[in-house]
Image (tube, rainbow, N blue to C red; front, side):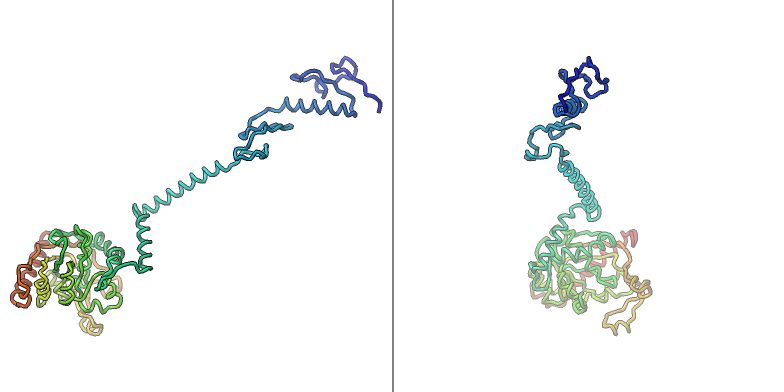
Amino acid sequence: MGDARIIPFDGSAGGSRGSGGRGARRPGNRGTRSETAAGGPQARQVRDELVIEEAEDDVPVRESPRRRTTRRGPVHAVDTPAPDGDATGDANAPAAPGPRLGRLAGALAGVVGGAARGLADGLAGPGWEDKAADGLAFVRRRITGDYEVDEFGFDPELTHAVLLSILRPLYDKYFRVEVRGLQNVPDEGGALIVANHSGTLPLDALMTQVAVHDHHARARNLRLLGADLVFQLPLVGQLARKSGHTLACHADAERLLRQGELVGVWPEGFKGLGKPFKDRYKLQRFGRGGFVASALRTGVPIVPCSIVGAEEIYPMVGNFRTLARLLGLPYFPVTPTFPLLGPIGLVPLPTRWHIEFGAPIRTDAYPAQTADDPMVVFNLTDEVRETIQHTIYRVLMQRRSVFF
């Protein structure tokens, strides 16, 4: 090709382009540029410079979060270090979403955690975290054997954490037991609690145990004296030993009393438990007064205890004596619901209970040898029995209803 001919930019010569041509003068261009004929290297250089300036004039400039200048045309990145300390990051990369997603995830976790804690508080009550921790610690101690059992087999931790916890709903919600006179139970030292027995099943003894432990100022453990049959039954005997019960004999009773324990006895025995409903709240004979002899030998006070409400939980209207002998039981009860309704008949009626502890009868003023005097033993036994009977009559007169 020959030499290119220079054409003036202002269009004075022929061949000028219109306002839309590439070489037209545009507002904002710096100085006057000329265009060579198409095809030469110089023309391409001039054209590229004009395109660059045209693109720079048309594209707005914005500042990105990473302090880089971004254009639709050719980009000139500003050499500013990335916030994460990476000075070689991509200038055109968008801002990292990590912090924003982290805040969102944290807020979501807080909402879910709060909802879960609220649900747990509603189901298990406030302080469920502490209860769960105590429960796990209890399981660990049971597995490792890190707990104490006395010579009678009493396991205080198992009794407080499990056995009494099972009985408390019956005590608080079902029978709604009202307790009076707990100030008559000594805060320390041995004492013998003597109560009337009724209800076909010995629930009255268990409710008395809960009352003393949960409502006494010192939360004392009541060690019950049970009949031989209790410890002969499978599982029942083991649980009785674990909860502090022992055989109703002079040797065990006196040993517990000398150790400063609180001992409970129900002298009516099976005669009181299995009496017919028509004889309710009429105390049976208190045996030969063996409990009084034990109190005289150890010098501990006798606390009379009267229980009202247990007579009506299983109204006993009959007794299958033949079946009871075959099963080795003292009686086989017939109630309005058992055995007619089968297992459902074993559910007790929700009567309202009243337990009242009377003033203690002191025995420390008597010489120890009076425990072998039948007249002294009989008089004290009769005094305890009459005190309980009169208290029962008074509570019955004050009671508004069997169930309310």
